Image 1 (cartoon, rainbow, N blue to C red):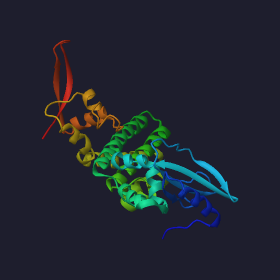
Image 2: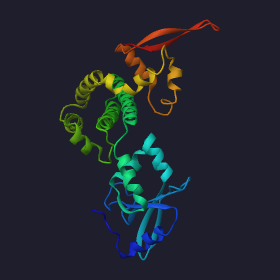
Image 3: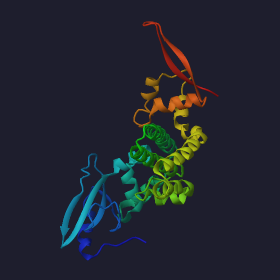
Length: 291
């Protein structure tokens, strides 16, 4: 059921409805963790403008504090295709529609509520590469006797693992990430609990976590790097690292390509081949997909 503003806030809503550029008005729950101030009611105003100042405005109307953040409809359209900013995606998911010209925002909330398959694969690959990196750092720091630093890296590993699980479910990570993961994969949630609260020595807790992570990383590798495999399938023949990293689909994906390719070589998903540079008589190592 849609929430209604009180009489004082109704004045603010009526002013917005008179503006030709305002497409929709949404409201966030007062107690929501995403609200930057405890005092006041947070409104999201969708406007038809190409350039929007996204700074949060703090106003007072009839002694009531109002917080307002504007979002351009073009930003939402782009986000529906290429992915929304994570915080914005969560905000839109929780916000209730107060006013919606032509039903635009109802449709947009449906479009952005779940990840498109392409974005899902890209985000999974990104978090998988982060998981690989943090697991590697955890092992190194543990071997060097830096238990607290290893613990810090293991927490980062768990964060990437948790986000990956959320993306696998087609959802956006929420502010209460571990409450979300508890519903999606209780076994991973329990590993987080064990690392945090188990009475065993810290080094032992980290070692046990690493065993579980490495098994999962190995067993889920092919599905987790599906995004990169599909990019490499677009070309017959070998890829250089630079060529792969500069591909338009990969360039802004924040994926650690060298690390993932190295792991894919170890798992026989790709093979190293020589790419000759006749001019400089140098053989660059390139990579080609296997079966």
